[in-house]
Image (tube, rainbow, N blue to C red; front, side):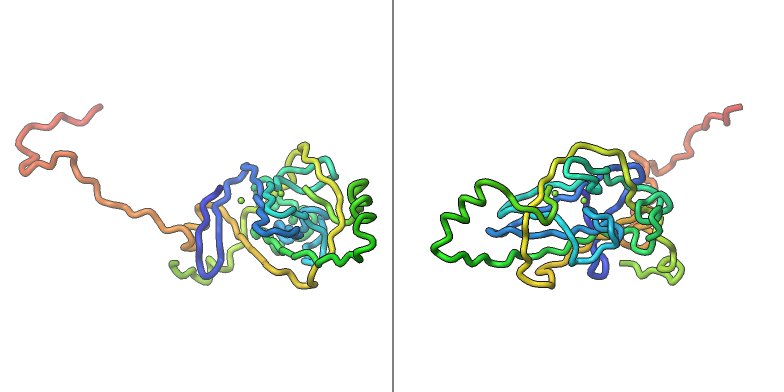
Length: 225
């Protein structure tokens, strides 16, 4: 897990160009939840400009899983990889405005009311098949005005395809509004230091291992040619 840094109510991670990453999703409740996942303002399942009313990943009670890329089909993803802004998936599809942020909108499932007479029939149907609807599958010092105006230089690219099976299921939201919203921002380590998100390392003067009171007592060697 990448180390997170906090600044002004936001959480940040340091990204390294060329590094692949995965997002770990955990459901810590005893009911199913829907997670709509946004990367750089793009829905990670559908590729649409992200909105909380779109498709997402359904997690079973207490389930944890990792999402390592853009969903290409029920069998494959394209890896998440940190890259230059111009090479990010969002920028290459004409949507660079929200590069540098990962978001999740979490929805509870609406309770299901089943008439007593049809309970056994419903169980039989559930055992036979799973109906379809949503895809399932799973990282200060005050800035100057100039620093705040700088463009985000890293984004998430559309990496190589890899095997990542998923399936389709139904999910009815308990509310049109998410029960929880989470946001994580990222940028290069150097730029996070410049923003004051990561503290600058302290520089201490070099101290001799064995300090001498009279270091000039003997003749030094001449400079090398």
